[in-house]
Length: 117
Image (cartoon, rainbow, N blue to C red; front, side, top):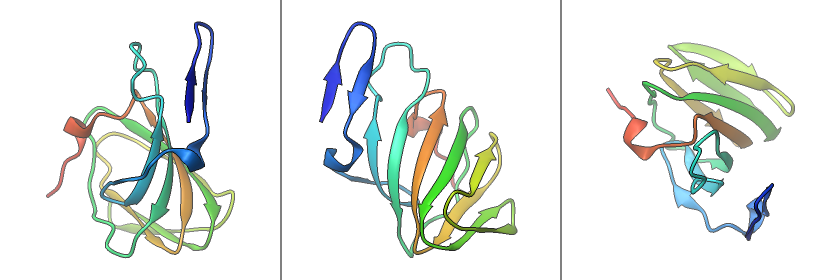
């Protein structure tokens, strides 16, 4: 459920229907903001997460649950709850493991900025 207001927006991430993304199932909030500053995604990582990158977008990952690793330009970085990573444009990445994360794309998520090799 998202509630619009002139001065703020509220989203109940666990009530937003999930959509499939390269990393798993994402519940996306604030994607319809005209300014396109950022979005927030609650993502359950799936076993078949695909390496991908973005040309314009930064992403901040915050691990909420589980343990695993992030593949970042071929390097494996171990993660656990409260691990946070800033992923810059051009960095090929994917999450691996039984993980639940918050993903903050900056600027707002744009599906046209998902690239695969």
